Amino acid sequence: MIGAGEIARRYARAIFGLADGAAAHAKMLGEVQSLAAEITGNADLARVLLTPIHPRNERKAVVHDVAERLGVSVEIRAAAEILVDENRLQLLPDLARALQAMVDEEAGRVAARVTSARPLDKAAQAEIKAALSRRVNADVAVEFAVDPELIGGIVARIGDLLLDGSIRTQLEQLGEVLKRGPAT
Image 1: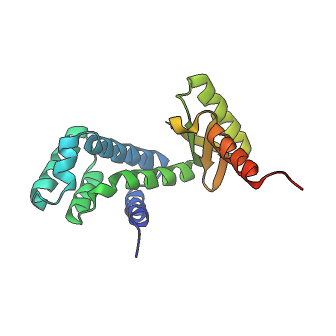
Image 2: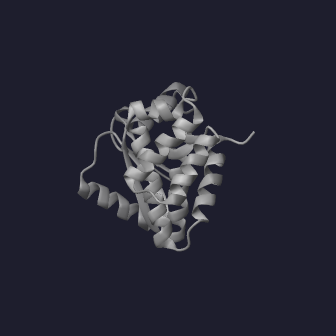
Image 3: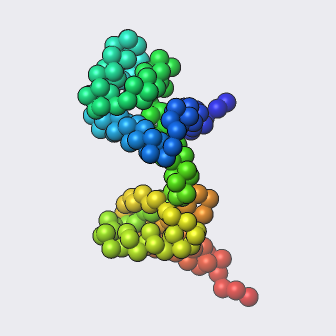
């Protein structure tokens, strides 16, 4: 069975193919992201659009109105309406992430996610971005997140590469060493 991520990537590839050139792709990405943010950021709107309780034609009309209000192109509006037809509008955030990856690849960027225990200031973010760019020898588009359970330090993920400098992981590793006992 095909997972939601793969389905979202297929829609993203279709949308990516509707335009030609990095500027057009970036514009489409921005439109998909703004539509996804509008829908997921409004609980009432999400409830109407993401539950099949409401008739499909009503949901399509709402998507159409929201897209027009946001100034979304006809192509992106039509794609969102197709997602409504297929009861897959909940894939819009995944579709936006997949489209982001395609736009980044086209621009020669790699995506990274950096998670820290506390919010990082702009200087720290810039320093981490520069270090990651040197590490992978490419421009890095970094998404920063906060997870207080890390206790301290950061965790960076770039594709399959995981750089874990969190205190939580260090404590877990220390715990494993202590469980094994002294080396003989």
